[in-house]
Length: 277
Image (tube, rainbow, N blue to C red; front, side, top):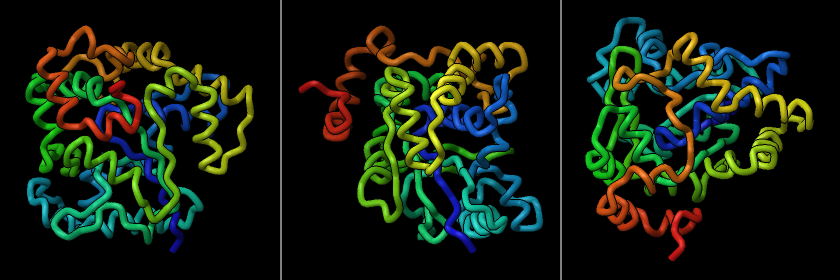
């Protein structure tokens, strides 16, 4: 059984979906954008409840977290069982254990891509997506027990604090892992996405790269969502692709909450260039 999983990992609302849309467009190399509702064909999520039911061979109770976790190894074994060289798997889980279950087992892992984003901007997007206030979200990002709650289509995902999550994926991984800043993907997309392709061992072709960036632009995916909707959108808000800008927190986040985020995550924010002092 091959170590074929390439994790596409991030804290929620940090650019995971954008990265997957870029990869879908680059790998397909079509003359028109890949429909956003077909992106799942290029990378399965590790929290889809249906796959856990398939392993259990019965409907599962998504609220029975320990039983769900016992099925996780079977889900991951099912992914690598196709004997492909690469299987892209989206995850928001921290790299660690939950109820003594290794969430990101190296025995199935080829490598990983981790996307990190300024937690001040994550706060805005997270709040909008999950229907929380900014204050509730700041508390969640600082809560070591933070999880995404399960629903009829997804099982629980184990996040921890924003800082814990980032450190788990960017320190001492037993497999190759590239870290990409969301802000760099926006500012220098050619350079940043080219480094992603190099990490994956995919040939970097200039025209193909430029086209994939254009086909995965915010304007393009927002237009597609307006026309056809998006399967990954949250029922808590109108649009998944709402703004996509960096630095929006300056206009929208209360000063007290900004101070709290900086206090909670100072060392990691400083390491990734999100603090000047």
